[in-house]
Length: 158
Image (tube, rainbow, N blue to C red):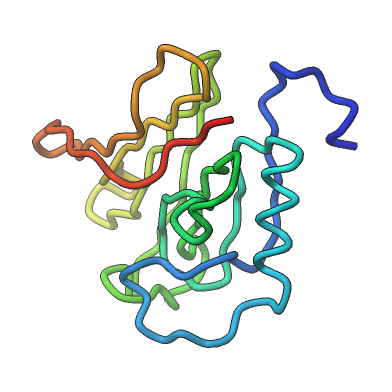
């Protein structure tokens, strides 16, 4: 189905298991046996964004973080846990989710954490993921508290 889409279509793939482990994830249980092949397929079809979970830890990265030789990097947005208290690491006991807005030049990912004092989810981090061959700039991370920008890994590109 991906092969027939127009080149300017923003392509999103969703699956449960991650293709790699976030740096903050300490337990390195075996991944799906064909994670490398899966990343190759994402590159072959120029997928812009992979949504996944399973680890109960939020993470934003790129398939090139795991396989630098890929001709096209796919952004990875991994969700924490929204409806249970099984978060991992800094998210232990917390409810988190991601709000993703797709724009012409890329995608904006807001990482939200439930704040019981305000009875709602509040932004704790924001990522800008530019599309390849746009003037969207590099992937950067902005924290709402100080709005300072610092570079993080992975720029998708073809």
